[in-house]
Image (cartoon, rainbow, N blue to C red; front, side):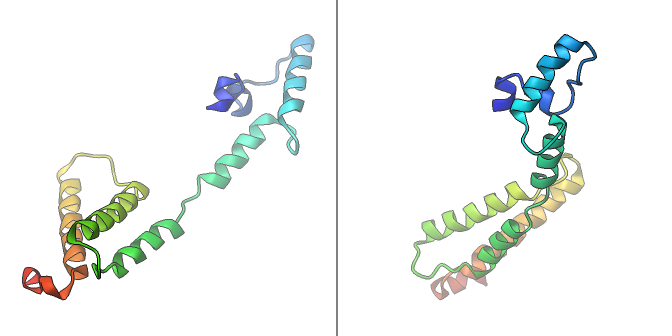
Length: 134
């Protein structure tokens, strides 16, 4: 957003090419020199950032999944336990992108995920709620 606000986004993402006109090219080079330290072309920065930060962050969903597996109600109230597990589910759902379609297959996947969540919730409840698990 900052690049766009300063009219630098087309310059950095490579959509604005170096002009052939000498006078304008001088200005383009000046702007380029102010924007770059280790690259010769502004779009190289964009490509580098895209390669570096567009990679999947597998450790984060893994950690959330481990937290879900190990979560127990223990001394939490039922409300706190539910809010904690729901927060983990929501974070995990936000990180793992599902197919954006609205077909029956997606509805079946969501139904299966909800059943899995129900099992996870019941698994973590204290023994006091063992009759609910049955």
